[in-house]
Image (cartoon, rainbow, N blue to C red):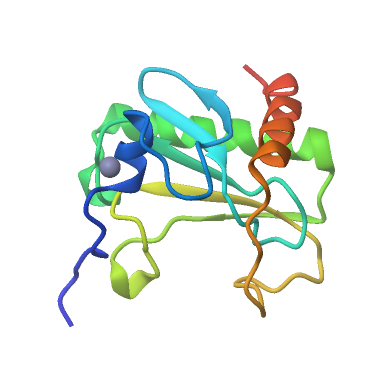
Amino acid sequence: VPFRLPERDPCPYCENFVGRYAWHGPPATVFEDDEVFVFLAPAPMGGMPGHLLVTTRRHAPTIFDLRPDEIGKLFGAVADGARALRTRFDPDGIVIQQNNGAGGFQTVPHIHVHVIPKTAEAPIPPATEVPVVPNDERVALAEQLRAVWPV
Ligand SMILES: [Zn+2]
C-alpha cells in the first residue's frame, strides 16, 4: 500500500486559522505564535482532561514536509505543553504521538503532535469512543493551562 494522506478537504486546521469551525466550535487555544498553534483536542484520549494538539500554522501535511526551523518550534511547543500539563494535572504519564499517513493512523492531513496526559489505567487508543468536551469547559481548561505555560 503506498503512503497516502487522509482525505479531508478543506483542511480543518487551516479552516480554524481563518475562522471557520467544525460543529464542536472554535479551538480552545492554549498557546499560539506566528508559527505554532496549541489547542485542546475536542475529545481527550488519556482518561483525563488536557489532551493537547500541537500544530504548525503553515499547512505542512506530515513530518516529511516540515522545515528545520519548524521542527524546532513544533517540538519546543510539545515540550512546553508537556510541562504545563505536568504542572496543572500531575498525570501518571504523558504520551506524545505523531501520526503520518492514513496507514499510520493520521486522520487530519496537517501535521499535529498529540500530547496526551493519562492515567495509568487508560488504554491508548481508548477502548470506547470518547465524548467531545463542551466548548465552554475546553475554554476554561485552556485558560488554566495558559496560566502555567512555561514561556
Ligand atoms: Zn492545513
